[in-house]
Image 1 (cartoon, helix red, strand yellow):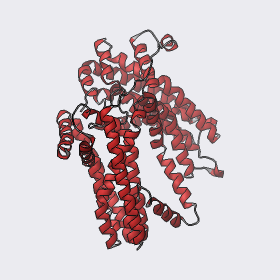
Image 2: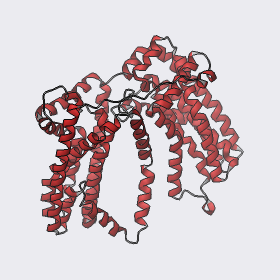
Image 3: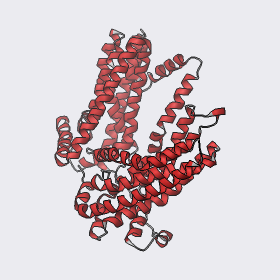
Image 4: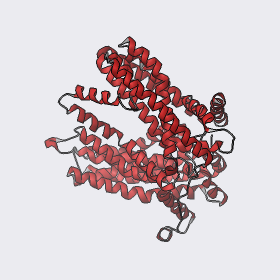
Length: 530
């Protein structure tokens, strides 16, 4: 059973690679990224091992605990995208006790499992401060990996019914994206709190020692205790490791048995209501119909909802990061350059516009069979996004100027923000026809395969960025100059609106004509499951 499920997992991967060449590119890019991270980890471990051997032991306990916690928390995200979910075996005469070892082994031999194993082996560089710690770490590598995998299965099993509800999934997605977006600020706050302690080293050691007694860190606490010569503590922590594995195994087997007998079915989003006021305000034309559908999706689809929230949160997060790092002007006031921060929304706008076709998935066939022209599709989607993005961007510009006490710089702030955002929208609406990206199907795990758009979106961003900077350069340049001469802000605003609107018009016309020629191919790309 173990060999069968491992082989099934890798045959699925080979099938995906054979069906879609973009998946091969994504696999190569992700592999190179993982190798880069592992190389960075190696350099850090060698540096800490040579410069501060005592700190290396504590750092490894904390790092190992973070890896385990990451597996457990990640189960909430990837459980709905599991190709070997228990429900797939519900009709087969295979008991849970025989199925579980194979599922655990299959999870441990995925790309993530192999990467985790390599990271655990690289940590031996740090454990080499002691022979006993090195031997214990080698022996406990399988135990640490098993705790990661079993813990992830238990978390996904316990929360399975809860996550099967549409409202719960939407809430988890929204909170998860906001948490990831705020991770930099949270890390900065944590670092500031540690550095503000009277003895940061002692606090760091206390955290590491405490984690060594927990289920997520006990496997790393054993070699840490041996490195410090605490044999009794190492023995007690080893008992915690064994007890954790036993408890997780029993819990995972029971949850698996339950899901094989009573598979979990996902629930939908509830009743769909008419547009009402929305339909009356928008023009009765193909452009208006596309815009109305786009706006409805931004309220009902968690992927669109998260993008809308990030239009507001992204500049606010950047403002918090700059404020925490002392981005200040004379007299301690927040620097006037903060009025340029709303322009960063051009990144969000470009991604939203470029991936809008992919978010439709097979619903895009509605536009194909109804004869919607490419220009109407491009213009309608831009109108739907603009109804939200324009007032949000304007509000952010006003707030930035109020915070800095520089209302005279409002034209400069608006010029930079709208100049770059309109240029990004124009470029995205054209390039998105050729590189629509990939997104999970509606109703599936929003963090599943293709949630970041894949390699196509990465290539699209590489193409959109220089176009955005080229078209928006006059608006941005005059906005920067307005920090010393506010009158130049009006020139920035004029350049931003004129050049930005020209970019939107050009992207709509050229992208629409290209879409008329590429409708079948675009539909095939965005509905691809491989």
